[in-house]
Image 1 (tube, rainbow, N blue to C red):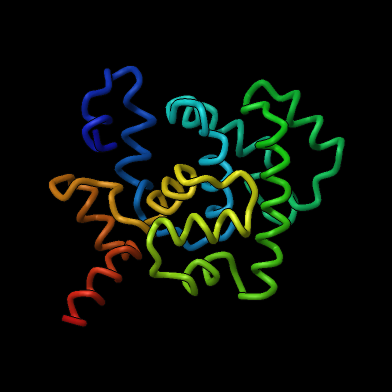
Image 2 (spheres, rainbow, N blue to C red):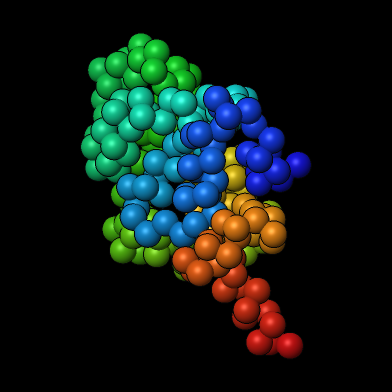
Length: 190
């Protein structure tokens, strides 16, 4: 079942957060490195949990991780780790907390080498999901196939975020979803 169908079938009391995310953010391009990093942290934390849990905790994640400011998170020390592990508003998993801090440090290195996290992504586009997964596993921590696929779909690098008959599909295309560029390039090459 696609996310579009899933959101449409949710009861009204649980649909609000999903609907906003689906209609305004999911599958749309992200330009800001901190937002890209935040999306990666959320996808990592979703592993083994429902996306509803993550959306319900998103404000707490933003607060706990200093609005996903890469430089701030990269500088977290043991006291910050303990603070995060004690924060009931987020997912308290040592591997996921450590991955967030490590991955912030990796993003800093990518920024130094490529100018931005976004530029690093652009440099590797287009690639298949399998190629992306290999690259992310080599580069980051706690980035398996589902996490990488969901992350790249959520930021418009892989197709599949929306069904073609979904109104958000056309808005994502107009916003410049990156996966669309590959389809256009493939059509032009024919």
